[in-house]
Length: 313
Length: 161
Image 1: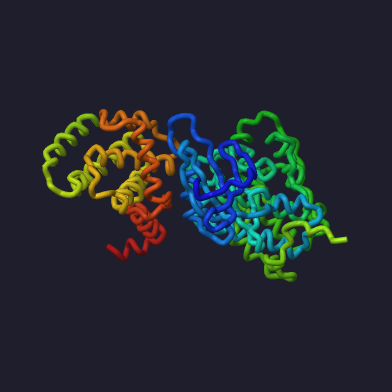
Image 2: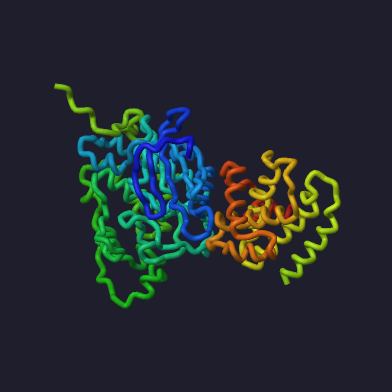
């Protein structure tokens, strides 16, 4: 801790607090996540250890870099990351920042590159949302938020907790309490973020509960049936449910994303698919014509990340 | 059953105490007993064997071979066992869905060290390794890789016969 100066608190989670700090020797800005010291006698927080292991294994241009980690005298673990000064969430909410089609293409491209790197190394992120997409000053997107991430060997018998993913980005199979979801679950979240970039508001906004979120999803993609999701019936929630859901047909995404180019909608339709086994993988999505078609993605250095300074009078 | 093992282990090593090496306890035989002890605990707790090999290769051996071990420091068999047990404690946190009760782990040492000793050693090991705990390849991973290649391509199997 003596090597860093804490400047201000950036955020607070259930298990940790995040600070903006500065390395004393170099003046380099850093983000510091301090895990709350355990009250019980279990020693170093296992979540911190897992995150360190994952991040050192996952070194990639679009994944946040861990600069340092240490324990404080009071048994709290601190992880030090490179400092990123804004997030996609802040960009989307700032109406002064324009977001053109080529900008969107670059944002989603960087997310897919990060996702491909994770999945290639068998890591499920499980918490993709605009708040976890951070940007360095040069426009490079850095994926963060690996608190819930885990190694997944892809074997179908591995049990996974349904207590992951933020509600609006939660895939239907996880909402249906599947414990056997896989990399395609992250891709659903990618699709939701892609849709949000185009709409400039979250696409599927359920009201607090998982059932309401499922309802939102079914109203757009239709209720699951034998043809659009053959494995649906074996999911725990479908299996135990005694309440019949009145069938609803899917609506066309073209009618929702009226301003989006055709190739973007075509990619979105191949990612946001009810049946997880029919969703594109990250590497397949990167090969979609959307990325080779005109216009090319905005060079990341030209992305606008913050509002222009007020004009001088 | 495990207590018998521990008793045997200690009696064996007490005979070794007059060896005049730099660290009498740091020899091949002690390491062998430590590895066996960790596998025994791991199997008893139904941990994956991968977790134990991670503890041995990625934590225990790396810590012991680090330069910060002063040659003047006394290093006994109990110290070795503390390093081994703590390595397993860390490995379980990193790789298993459950955690190990630190008190039970200390009890297994029959008074050689306490739960607090394990928690102190945990921080010492992590600091010495500079928190670099990424997964290096372990022998089990090589075996799994070879097996997956053999399964993928039956011809490899046929050719090797």
